[in-house]
Image (cartoon, rainbow over all chains, first blue to last red; front, side):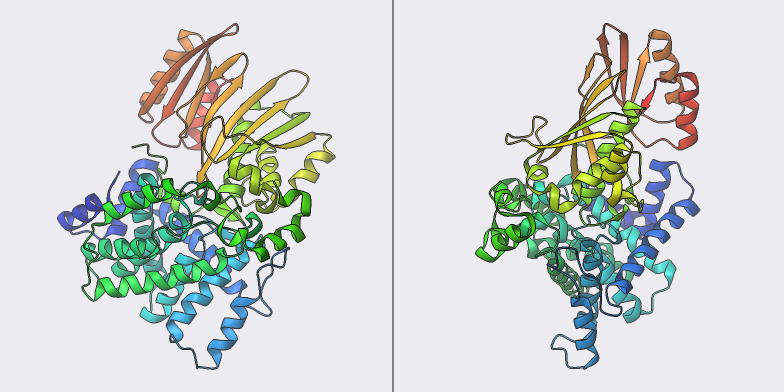
Length: 296
Length: 217
């Protein structure tokens, strides 16, 4: 099993195999399953992602039962149609895809957690935008997910991916880094560039806290996936342009782990700090759960 | 380094009903572990929540998720949001307790499940470590107090030295055993195996065929 980004990159360079291929081979070995079965399972995950990307941006959109989130992917869709976006249509398509997916999640719809449900929009945000930008085949999109998974496993096993232990940097930060690295590979970048993209993506979101209003995966989680996907695309482009992070990826992951452990409990998915502790955030919590519970 | 995430599908997946992988899908997985150990219909379910679980279980759907797991549902089962009503209809008493102190198994996403009926009673302490992946850190059953390291899969075998030897032999053909513990109670011996990979359904069936008290988590 690949335990570090350096091991993964070295193996890709020595064997001259793409990272997705190394991931598929590792999965065949560890799960004792056939290549066909593994690829089929990943295909199902891709289908669930595609359905969520679509569902949140159709008609009037989807809404959570609390009313805190929903209907905003549709606003982005309509805004994009005016052709006047400031950051360009590619970026806003990525943002729409991410927000749509997380709105579906908040409305208790079906999603594929990548790596978590709170960060579930980031990777689909990248992949379905690159599909249109680079004319990716279904096979290539599945390859993208294996590459993202390979880097995600290294992050998860070295630093963790739970907001309750590592803050939002561990969720959206990890998703963003996975998306950045996989985007580099699918765009024809080198394994080293994948590693740099991952390192830059995490470095840029280092310290991001987990402060959900009322403890719900809604505010600010849905829009945090917009920054997750934007950061992934930017980090991938920076790496493809030849920029480097200077601090190696594995050291960045270790730093993220340390930063996460140093975060106070109030900023690790307790709904007690950050935006959750603002007057408006507290009012929302009281409205949803009642006053007595709000003190808990 | 503890390898909790052994499969690419721990990271790209699971497919689940929102909104939280740790507080919904992970809670469902802790419930499923309790279901696998209890192997029967409970009359009473008591859930103790700690730290982040205690603060946010209502908003995350943790309550219905954990009950759905105890009923044996998968995290993407469309019945998941209705699990509490379905359990109550079967006459099961359910209690949720928000514990004020720190987690006794040292993780912010901790749930401790007590299940009982007329013939038995168990306690399972699990934590949800992110992305739907869980650890089981304590199990009380049949007079045993089992304290696994945490990461799954875990195999529990009750019986004598013969059973131990048989299962050890069978596992040798399947996967590496990362750790092994032996526990004793008035009811005899229990052997805990921490396995390197998840077993396939037919492999588990094969093990159960020789030992019907075997628990696979």
